[in-house]
Length: 559
Ligand SMILES: O=C(O)[C@H](O)COP(=O)(O)O
Ligand SMILES: [Mn+2]
Ligand SMILES: [Mn+2]
Image 1 (cartoon, rainbow, N blue to C red):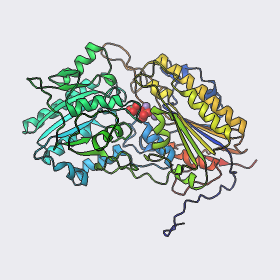
Image 2 (tube, rainbow, N blue to C red):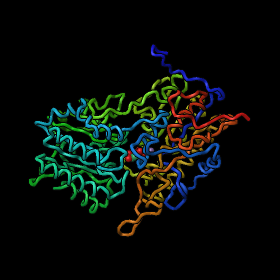
Image 3 (cartoon, rainbow, N blue to C red):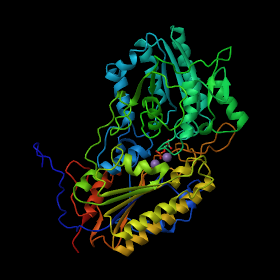
Image 4 (cartoon, rainbow, N blue to C red):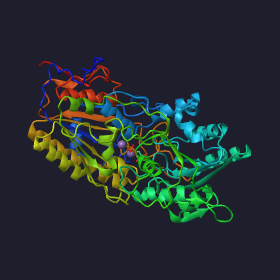
């Protein structure tokens, strides 16, 4: 208990014992939707997940994983890993980056903050560079926010602006990059009419240029550095619209994987390399895929690739992306203050924790889970294991990914008796789902199901408890639908493959020999969401969750 009366000590659960091994399994991108041929989870053979569903309604239920249930601005916002794992780990709903940036832009407060004042110093003599994902997906960034920022920055004195665009096709339909570039070009033309020298300067597909995460492949960031900072790329165009259209057509690549390009003037010179005295803003609000670039832009000492030139710039993130590393040190909007997460409480109460995934999702069960905080709380009680992901491939080529390796690590951790909580993220349904390859996604779902089986078998052996859930939907719906739920055809009469997440709810399944008789899902929380899960597994560890956590999903009835 500190002087303010706060204590990390959790109250004992009146009915549930301590000392059980609890496996918490997060299937990434595994939602519940009507059965049809575009529902890869339904098409896949998933005997383990199917058997869990037989526990409905006492041991299997659905929870909300999108929109306001996870702190997003509207019910039209699909869920995503950041907000999903934040809610799962923190047990409460926080207004998330998307919403905080909306507020800051609408109120104009963004222009009064320290971060904006810091970059503004460069507006007289230097260029303002805006780097980020050009998309209205609302997962990492939003086009309307970029539009407002462009307008606001120019009204606050920016005279020369260069935008460096990463094309999406992952949180939005493939091919939509063309329309986004058109919209942005229109806005920039309007700024030019007002005397602002504003242009797109470079770009590339988000999965090939700049937006890697968790240090899976620094070459991705290096390509971005060359294009956005050095002004060098294998492809040069006079306009971004031409770049995106030609690269898609000539190379037959999708938006996500466009190669890096720079825009050049009539003499072939890049129009917007980043130079001493310039300001840079990375306009994504979401952290994971901006942290690596932020390091390259901010750190004096940096050895991940040769930056060739390290310009003296003033750099600010849309948000601070990592609270522990305080990276970047300058930012336009304060991130959600996610504190007192379940992970922190549990280590304070002696719970030994093991967390594991492969690189592309490793930060999800650690960094996002712990409220966007790197590292663990107490290395004596926690072990975080990262299995290296394949890099340089799209995951439809290896749809099984490292699911079984993750499951083996989890199994061994459970059988070792050294841990009270064993937490994993199984990435397949999400990562393969994002490729839009339906057959491969089916294989990925089957691999994830096998991995769940391996973990549940280990839980069975040690008399433990399991909680299986997901962070948002993806693989359960792979086609764009109209309001009635029918596949919506494009102008040519073709179905449109949905590479993005969905608005679907996700399952929560509980069980295992250690789960006391009489434990069942309450029926009075029909609107429950991911944030209700933390209190639930805290109960399985024998504790009552803190008062301000969203209520537990379970009750214990006496037989
Ligand atoms: O970053 C990505 O891969 C997608 O934009 C969102 O997927 P995730 O939220 O599952 O990571
Ligand atoms: Mn996810
Ligand atoms: Mn995803």
